[in-house]
Amino acid sequence: MATLSRKILNWLDERFGAGSVEEFLRHKTVPVSRHIIWYYLGGMTLFLFIIQVLTGILLLLYYRPTPNDAFESVQYIMTQVRFGWLIRSVHSWSANLMIFTAFLHMFSVYFLKAYRKPRELTWISGILLLFILLGFGFSGYLLPWNTLAFFATKVGTEMAGSIPGIGKWFLVFLRGGEEVTGATLTRFFGFHVAVLPGLATLLLAIHLFLVQRLGMSVPPSVERAIAEGRTAQRSMPFFPNFLLRDMIGWYAALGALGGLAAIFPWELGTKADAFAAAPAGIRPEWYFLFMFQTLKYLPAKILFLEGELAGLLVFGVAAAVWVLVPFLDRRIGFGRMTRFFTGLGIFMIGYIVVLSALALR
Amino acid sequence: METPDPTPRETVQPGRRWVNLLLGSGVAASIISFIYPAMRYIIPPPVAESASRFVVAAKVGELKNNSGKIFKFGSRPGLLVRLADGSYRAFSAVCTHLNCTVQYRSDLQEIWCACHNGLYDLEGRNVSGPPPRPLETFEVHIQGEDVVVTRTT
Image 1 (cartoon, rainbow over the protein chains, first blue to last red):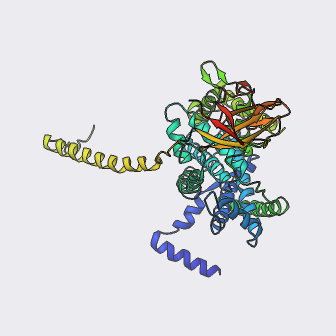
Image 2 (image 1 turned 120 degrees about the vertical axis):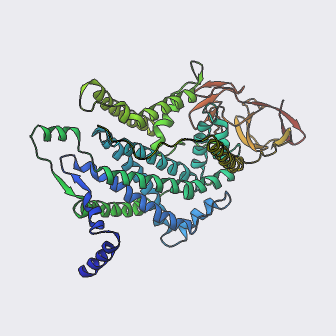
């Protein structure tokens, strides 16, 4: 076995230069410090993304994206297809865990200031990937064509429609018409299985290339300690040392997914009916709850703006600031500016947690 | 001391400038001619609005006093309410906030949107929560056994 892999490596080296494959693998190291736990989150998110691709392909074998068939086909997967309940529940659970680990990954990168020069573009590609994941969540939520998803999609697309200028065009583009109908389902299916996977693959390739090229960031506090001679610079090779540790986490995640899917299979709800009232207790996926709850508190008019437009504007500005943080937080580790951004991050987490909790009340 | 650049500076000749301009605008025009149909394609053709100005929303006696019913008015939902005194009111059931479908709450004797907790009174006026405008109201007539709802405008 060892000689076979040796032979394959030699075969590749003869063609691509001496030791190029090993060199590529050896180039990447992971800084060892007390913050190392946070370095597992990107890999975990990637692992869950791969689970999504695999279970998504399996779901495609039975799913039918039309308003007459969608709900029934998911019902069929859940009740008739052998292990269909497992595949669909793993897809749903993994989607939610993936968004959770992506958020954790983002906040850990944020607080460890890993976005600072030269990794600005890594940060931006990561945030864009998170937006794509939210797009996956929003479009995938509608696909079972149940009541909750139907109204969540109405509200979500209507909000997109309140963007000044292009709102109306954007709403019709998203819905495939003025209303949420079968045309919307067909479009969302296309976004979910073709457009977004394409964009995600491209961005992921850029993100991983940048991580490979620039190496992993050492937190500023550790960097300072090294500079002052209080500690030595320590690192471990990514391959195989860190990857093997990663894989233990992935194995545990697989176990957790199986367990969650078996004990809490994902609900299907009732089939969407365009001519029924929105049911009580309606709410979107948990990662949109803080925005949903904000909408509830906004009055009809704020100054001269409609309430939801004002909310959208604030969220838009916050998202723009968040994307541009590497360019705003320049003097890392010094002065008030960097403390302001740490405070901003804590405020964001606090806002998301408190508003989400209020929505669940 | 700087060594002189061995390659001669490129001088753009007037003829070359014209070729670049023509080539560039040709490519730009062809790209636009590819993008334009694609942009038009992704916006679906408009659906003809339901021409009908009235609809049979319910049968007489179908609704108890102090209750409501969603009915289909063209491509949109409407809400027929029978008040406690037995009279009828009809509204568009589309919440003016974010497009959810409202319902009649017999316990509050008001119209409620479950999505963001918006409330309207029985004239369709937005009284609390986020809705920015009143609900569109329709006229209701009884014709024989039918409760007929008519668009006013």
